[in-house]
Length: 353
Image (cartoon, rainbow, N blue to C red; front, side, top):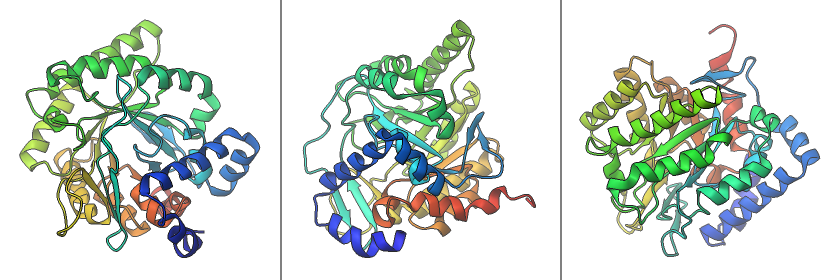
């Protein structure tokens, strides 16, 4: 299937504007999710499962491969993730306020590099509307098949000093549906958002969300929801050390490394936005390796960035990641790329390890 996609389908899709092609793929995935018999057959054929569920930060995953945030921003198609081989899906990024994102065009492909530059800026329907949608579609059975991560970020018009309240609103609106939350403070597409990674804002932001999480768990008599922080690949090691200190002090559950990069690998590329895809891999794997070493492998890592073949997925696992995610890799390898990766990673969970 991957070869058919690359030779036949991809050239056709690449004649379309990247955002138009994305909407076509999203609609197709939504159709699969809305037809239970089709979804179940495709799950049976494509969902590669480990002998035992992969338990990371207290959540059981059928395999180690997830669909990164950015594909299903508004929770329209997440039910079909397992049908395409994914062991989890991360929807979003979702903000407190509904927003259109940055002006178009805002997605650019570079096929010879297997890269994409996007400056979308968190276009989404807002936490309240997406919460209502999830209330109609999330079921215990569906979440068991494929854990649901919810990625939340700051609304564009919210000042940095009020960021904690913005994230708290989204957390509270969406908490009933999340198997884990990802706090996005690292997108380059919302002005000044990356400043939230620094000492001035990060401790207050994460402590506020953590407290809300603990309070909710006590009030409802349920387990707290794992909280994961998503960081940029452009941080220095001292900056990463500072972030790790905050995560350790608050006993947060994991880190997602990394978001897109503001660096460019050649002249002539779109300058606005973040670059993903193959050129990002070396930066991302270095960050994963550094975090794993700095935390002695005790902090779960979701690795994302530049995974465009099965070998790179394996490198991320060897570098210390517990889970991997793809998005741009799927654009270049096809809709069943997750299945190929999950199959290639079965060695990690075989009996002799």
